[in-house]
Image (cartoon, rainbow, N blue to C red; front, side, top):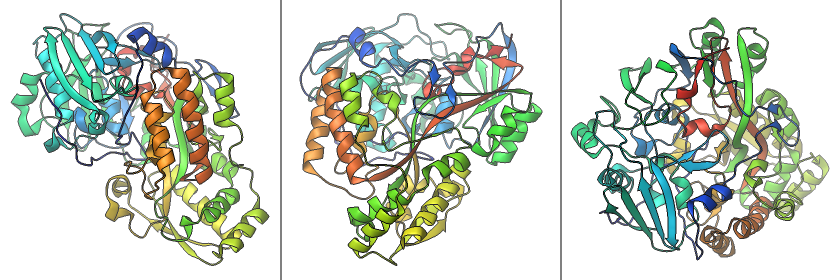
Length: 558
């Protein structure tokens, strides 16, 4: 049995947002696992993006058969593959194929059983996970309830500084209640906790394997997990190889091996996909969309990304502490120009902090309340100038961070600078090296002297609260230190509500409040992009690849 200790502030964030460290709370209701799946029914599975932008594909064609191997381009080498600190794209893109969670996020962004064959909620503060029998770890040992208790316990161990620790802040205990049963007791009802059990927060690893690896766990040797692939050779600075695990409990992977190649340069990644050195990749450089789309060597797909591009306000002690200045900057931004240049035309201008797909399960009235009547996005320079004059901010200096990490970052920073120039603000760019960009999310000292920076946020669950909780007092991504007790109370009520209709109605009000305050300035929705050459097919098009064993579906193209 584990009893979580009080939590210190944790690392979280990501290259451009990522799942934040969260403090979750909740209230009364009962929910069976079947009802939970219905509540998290995911976005529409086909058709357009909803309001312009590219057509979204529900998936890629199913593979016709097995292949010996395929290679995949990733933009950076993970510092570790320890699941407790899997908070960014490179780690999760690889880890999702090796380690599995109690629940599973599907390619359609719905929730289904994972290593737990059933999740039940006998009372408002209890979740019971009945485990699948006969599941083997990569070392051959059989999974038991002890492994689950141990694995979840690592997320709350202060020595681990787990990125997902605050998911467990409302957990009173995790204990074994049968050879294949684990019971989680909450301090108060929590509608979010069971959803996060489909992310890296819910990963189960072998206690014996993790303890044997000691401090080297996640960097050398195996990962002691249950997925369709196991960790093979890791050539530091170059690549990671995964080998098919033939003892897998589920559907066998179609490829015998997967080679993940680390390529920090966007042009190098694109050229590798064009030449065949890499068979495919996610997080395609936006400047390469047209080259890949028109190359004739493969196909570029777009799918639901649950991602929004924003300008994060990091300092409200200066001019941006005046709401009129934030509104003026929002009114002066050329969002359409940024989408065309920065996102390669593959985004959608938005005035919403949350994606439209996150509201797919809401009633028409709730969706209208959440997405209608938000601050306008059409540029209005004269009104913006008037707000700057009214606020006495003309000529004031602000600093926005930029980086060559990708043109979505650099061109948004430039667009913010141009917007300021149009309305009388002196906005200066501060260039940060790509490898240091993540520090903006994790280190307050790295944000000193910076008033704002481009931030792309992706949801880790299909619930608007995943993003909206970031503006709660003390939230990890609440960089500007915004605090409003009424908003905090709304977050508590939403997290407390198991009934999805009632919860989404509360979240719609929270969305309006956060949008009106412009704590982040919303710019665009950004779909997931994936490129596959003519050798392979089967990869999901949605952001599910972060937690779903997507590589197991990749095989020979028809």
